[in-house]
Length: 178
Image (cartoon, rainbow, N blue to C red; front, side):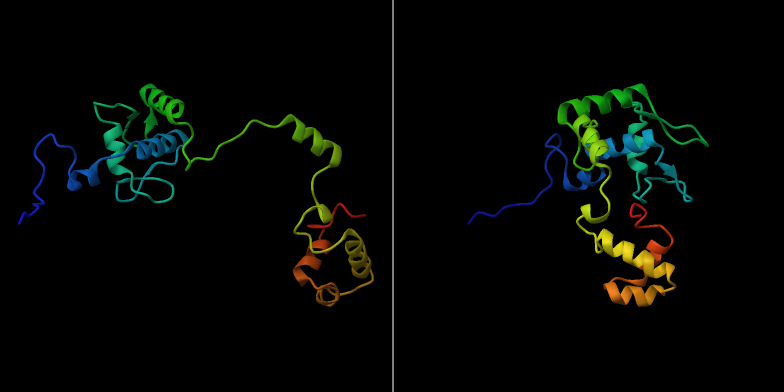
């Protein structure tokens, strides 16, 4: 009968599970460099570098600032700064892999959509698929408000919340209806 051993691999066999936890992958470097560029990587109260969402980035910061990479510079009392080498690495990564799914993609403005919106105006009122009231109902509500109706009594008539009627009263909503 043959038994399998789970011995540690020999030197040069690649990262071990223990080593893999301490290695920083390219996606972490990408998030780090974007955070440094945007100014969202800060030094916390316990003197560790953190992202805006609280993720600990201390190890990645020091690896990216190491002599072998030099993608960012660390100056006491200042936030980390991205270097030209860091910008070049980030640009090469974008070119090779495209935008990361964790990063929003900003498309160029569509001239046809802008022209269409200019012709038809912004979507509001009944043209929005979540509208609860028609424009005629909004006109009726404005008339009832002018006659002295309370928000809760008008809301009961139309099946909406008193806050919706208050929004019409204070011109937060329904401004486009005369």
